Amino acid sequence: MSEDFSIKNFSSNQISDVKNNIKEKLEEYAKRHKDDEIKKDDNSSENELVEYQEEDETKTSKTSSSTALKSNSSLNFASSGNPELDALHMEQQIKTNELIRIQKSITNKTKELNRLSLRLARVQNGSDSSKSNLTSKISTCRGAISELESNLSSVQNDLSSISQKINQILTAPSTSTSATAGMSGVSSSSASGSFVSTGSISSDVAQKLDNKLGSGFAAKCEQVAAKLGCDPNDLLGMMYSESGLNPNIVGYNGAVGLIQFIPSTLQENGYTQSQVASMTGVQQLDVVYEVLAKSKSMAGFSSSDKLDGGSLYAICFLPAYAKNEVLCSQSGSTSWAYGPNSGLDLDNDGNISKTDLAQRLKNKYQEMAQNI
Image (cartoon, helix red, strand yellow):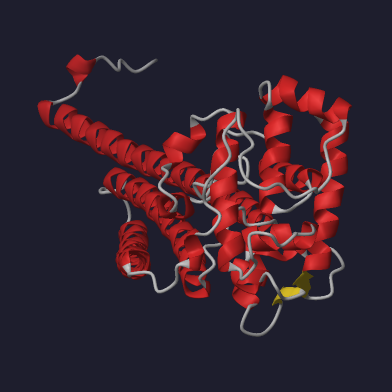
């Protein structure tokens, strides 16, 4: 005989006990399921964070590699002729790069903090150990951000101090009148002044230059070279080395134009970066002449002195040392100039010499003649 399990055979107390039992089982299941979801979500968030950190490290590695490549190549700027000012300009660039790096680190750490905070909100009903671990990570992350912000403030103060020192030097009254010698300039239609016979540009190269940079560029380049007392082919080699003969290119450090003059150098000669960047190649040769004529004078050369390739590059690179064969060395008082320009040390002897610079101009001229 089978039993009748109809609900009418159960007492009200039995039915109540069954309901409570079912309720307890459901609550237990729901809690266990929620804990599993929290763990799953926690692991997923952890993996996201690891992936984010790995991605950030990859980006940092690429940025560091890019920075290293830049630091080993020629620093494209014309020196002011004042070693103290040159040192300040270089320190300013280094500090600016450091500022950018810190700002990126703060951004990345802030993203990490937001992720950790989101995870903590998700596990509020989870285990105490999970919450404690996340709280510790959040505290560490906030501490790192605080330290980065402190470093950022310090670098900003350093940059402000450097800018003040640069302005003091730039606004100080000049004690020499030789710095303005040879500044008459060369017009595109006139070759006024006494010219030094320094060679000429071959007809085929001249034609290519005019096609690329505008009619009359080659002829004006010869005029500028003659006024400076240098070979026009050396001048072309230097311009190709610095800018690839692109008058409108702006470098990562704000340097602009055919010889990549930095903004402070242009300011000293009455120009702005935007003015020079908007000029044609033919127009910009006037700026090239004015800046290099001033640098030649400040380096101690007379207006009639001829400049070989090494000396020409030297008055642009480090005019204060342009009369020395060795301009800067890997060690010693001029190491500040060697480090970021070590690519100019062609014979890798730990010195950047005028022989190195002259050879670089020859190499770059040959490269230009083939590729223009």
